[in-house]
Amino acid sequence: MRITVIIVLCFAVCLSAKAQANDTEAALYNIGFGAIFSTVGAIINKPKEEPLGKVIKKSLWQGALGGYLTFESKRILREAQRQEQWEYFWAAKLVNAAGTSIKENAALNTNFYDRWHLNIGFNRIEIMTKDEFSIKYRLMPVAFTYTIGIALQTKFELNKTLKTGEFIFSSNTNRFTETHSRGIALPGNVVLYSPEKNDLSLMSHEIIHLYQSNDFSIFNTYLNKSLSKWSSKNSTINWFNNHLYIEYHYLLLRPVYVFETETANSYYDNFLEREAGYYSNTLWAD
Image (cartoon, helix red, strand yellow):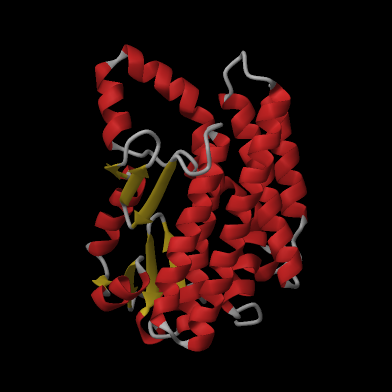
């Protein structure tokens, strides 16, 4: 119960920082998010015999480091559309993956360099560096389900996917004009309105939403103890945990987005949309 209260309070603090009017405020938000929620996770995952003070000290600086790299990844993405250089999209993706990995390691109460991962669509590639180097593949079922549904209704943009490292699709559906939108980010995927699909600012805006999903993946680590316990007792659950990375964080991300939308006075009063607009220079776009 105490942990739940802490998480709610942390969210209240983080989401109250709606401005992000400059890079200093944006950096402080990302650093604070990483430090706070990594520390909560580390406390949840710490062994009973380990001193609390030691855990907090370690997770705070590791989470802050991961948060700073997350901030830099979003700034690089902003430069990608400013400079119109596709190489920046991959640079941003790799830096974001590093920042997310460090935050997750901190929340798991491990060294920040123990495990790295890279998400591409519904594919999660994990690189283990502790003790012995190894590479592990895990499928993300929520993103996989969305990818199948999207692929059946839209056009797969192979060139843009290869250039960004994200699954990009395009569509002429009337749904875009009906909702006055030009793109949408769904788990592991981006769908762009076909006439606007070459707009790099739009693409950056939607990719920032994927990065926000990566931010929230830190909450999956809060279930690590329970999942490990179930895996040790049930071979079926153990198989699923070894081969699938279930995106439980969407159970939190979606309600947060809906809450922000319903309480917002305007489109960009939604914190998640405002952040996407800030880094993609679409803040005042219609």
